[in-house]
Image 1 (spheres, rainbow, N blue to C red):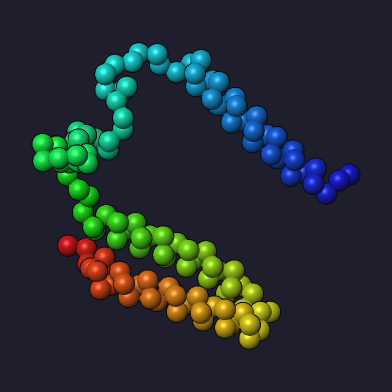
Image 2: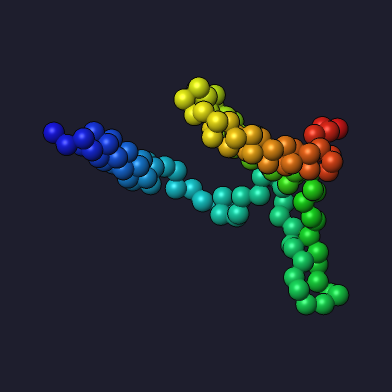
Length: 126
């Protein structure tokens, strides 16, 4: 038996489940459409028109606060940090000096991003 066979079987099962789910949802799902369902999803907030390049007569939309982007960046920074730190911690003794130096450089890079977040006020939750 081939070594890749179990992986191919699992991939086939996943693909079949995805296709079955889409077909079943379209067959048994509700078919009542109204104006609210056909509009773009805006997190429950009425959509506002955004600024269009052109002239002073344009209607400008409300901008997202910087806090939103800082929170998203904070999540990405620490999510990536954890993804790299767990395997390193498990195999720390087997990696030697090179593994330690690579992780020290990584921690330095994450610390720079952390310091930027801190200075921009991304860690104060008021």
